[in-house]
Image (cartoon, rainbow, N blue to C red; front, side):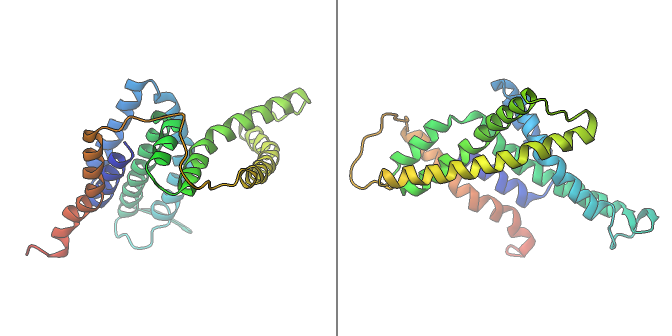
Length: 241
């Protein structure tokens, strides 16, 4: 699935067509609805894309200095039609990358993915890096919930509205970062005590099926990661003129 998503994202980004990006986003949402993970996908996507879209709108939509079709000009604000189009196109490209990546995180069994990397003969450092990345978001989400419950029991009042949200963020960010740093320190000590990375043959308790058809599809998708963008961009380079 990761190879297929990488091929789709690479080709869609190279094509730079709003209708193709929109189609990919609708397809991802449809898959999430079918799998019963649409709510989580939309929530995570909104949390990541909202600041990204805001910055793109601010840079390209509200302060564009090159567009000729001026819609509004007041002081440092200069809104042009070309700037809004550019912001929308970049927003769609970013959305494809984020939503497709999040779809993998909500659908793929993390333990199976780590076991597959470990059995593939890849360096053990790669498997550990992948596992740490995949488990980071759920662990931080659970930890910030525990921190919030502990602060509520202590009687910490944050209020409502945007001001309360920022106050809640400030109260939780410091203990969350400190606990993450402490966890990284403890984990490094545990890995060093176990002699990571281990050498020689070792047996995995979890095995992941990998048929010949799956391997062929994976190879085809990895090739499409390179050939897809080349096929899209080659005509604009004048190779066939």
